[in-house]
Length: 206
Image (cartoon, rainbow, N blue to C red; front, side):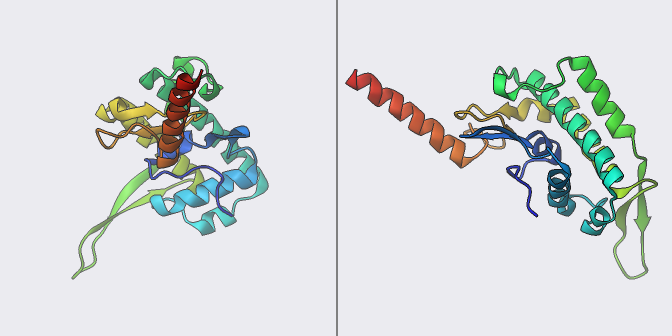
């Protein structure tokens, strides 16, 4: 099952923020149920060495419920921090976490929740390699790793590249990776240009 969330190739913390998304029918939550949580984590598997599809298949219903609570809590905290970093005024994009201090607390707790560490493997005749190990559940460790990446995102200069997309009705965030980039996606850019064209045309006919 594929996630409903738009996947834009952004860093995983931003992809997690974007599990709240919008279309003509309104604002949606891709993590609204267990299937949605599992589908989004499955999409993240290829981007972390902590989590494999088989790890998700082993999750029990209580495991998945706990994971869903952590993931949505982290997502809402990240959206609050993103709104702070970007000065985001979009009402539809507002997070359930209202206070900046609360968002920081959630993020820090998520980053430290599941211990993980790096190990080196080096077989004679081969190049050395780094692997990640965890003492906890793989999916939980992956959530903590996403939180740690988010700490780095907000604490470093990348924070200044974070943008709220102001395409019509959009509630997504993105990292500005090109000086001319204004939108989260080409689709939002096309809608914004169409809206501007419509407004200009309407102004000349009234």
